[in-house]
Amino acid sequence: MILAAAERAQTAEQAAGAAATVPKDPAMAAVTANAETFVMMILLTLLAAITLAIIRQRNMFGVVILASIYSFLMASVMLALDAVDVAMTEASVGAGISTVVLLTTLYLTGSVEYPRPRSVAIPLFVSLVVGAALVWGTIGLPDFGIADAPIHKHVAPTYIEYSKKHEMPPNMVTAVLADFRGFDTLGETTVVFTAGIGVLLLLQGGWRTSGNSRRDDEDNELDIDGGEA
Amino acid sequence: MEMIADAISWCLIVPGCFFLVTGALGLLRMPDVYTRMHAASVIETLGATLLVLGLIVQAGLTLVALKLVFVLALLFFFGPVASHALAQAALHADVKPVLAEDRRSRNLDSGPTGLAGSKEEPSP
Amino acid sequence: MFYVATGAVLAALMLAVIRAIRGPTVFDRVLASNTIGTLAILLLASYGFLTDRPEFLDIGLTYGLLNLIGTFAVLKFFRHGDLAHDIAEDQEKSRWK
Image (tube, rainbow over all chains, first blue to last red; front, side, top):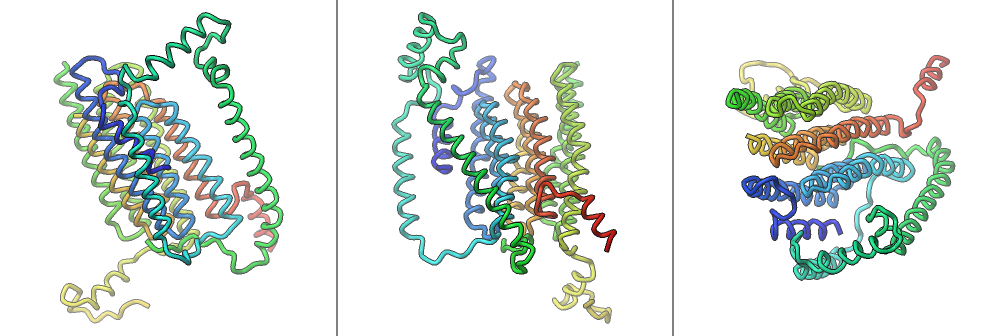
């Protein structure tokens, strides 16, 4: 999913670079487009490198730190795409909370991944086929941010007209989230709530039992310095 | 007036960029965690300070310059604290530094580039 | 000139990422993570000036704080295995030995 999103962002970027930001005059438009493409290409390459390193790494503490680096780089990518609020959320969730929560998990379980017993031919083939299908699907999408995509000509004007005529919340974004797409919001809140409760149950149960067993068990040490490159 | 501001910010930004790249290169090439921390702190203090000062000169007397001053103060004060915490944590976890005697003894075994004239025993 | 600044920050980012991937101990990776956080702030500043939109510097302040607190949380975790660990308890226990 990460790789597909990166592919999509890169395709969209190379398809219509200047339409993404709002430049102040035509001379700046060319500069902005070039700069954005350049920065995005390098950042996406670094993201791919970090992802490969996460897959190959055996020591779990190293994986957690690499995941926090991934979040910082992803926040920079979102900044280059002009989505500043999403970038801040990504940085605080990925590099802040998620790292700490993963480390808590590692304290409760072991910290070295066991080697895989079987070959990887079939899973690799399946993921290559699915990834190729996703990329082929995104080619059919309209270019990023142009003015006559269907979503700008049919969906958005309908929402705007409807929320002006009828008794909707004055903020149109709230109207879309809570009225037009209310079922999506309901599903999302259910998912987040369930995930939170599940995590709390797991952590509370594991904390009590694993804390006692850790003091007796000699082999269960925090294996920090190990791991090959 | 703009030309003077441009000249000053060129003179500040280019050394800043040089120190950024040098620090990152040191981060890559140094043999040990502790020496890499020395190289990385060059990025946070010299590189960041010169670069942000150059950007402040470009921004003039606006709100953006004030925000840049805050960013600079943050990097300047938090960088050494993080390095200190990292060094203490590494020491506590028994990460041994690579000492000069170890490297010299390795050179002695490896042929004509070592200290050919001395009769030192390699340290245990 | 902002091209030079952005290019240098990106080059430093690449080298720091290589160190994060290669570093044998985990403290190398924490050091690389701290450096990448600082370089992300500098990238934000120089990219904002490059595209003539320097209004995103507030996010840089957030990144700086997150970077520091994240590094401290990770290091505290490596040392004690617990974020709520009380150092005064350790000192008391060692005093009564």
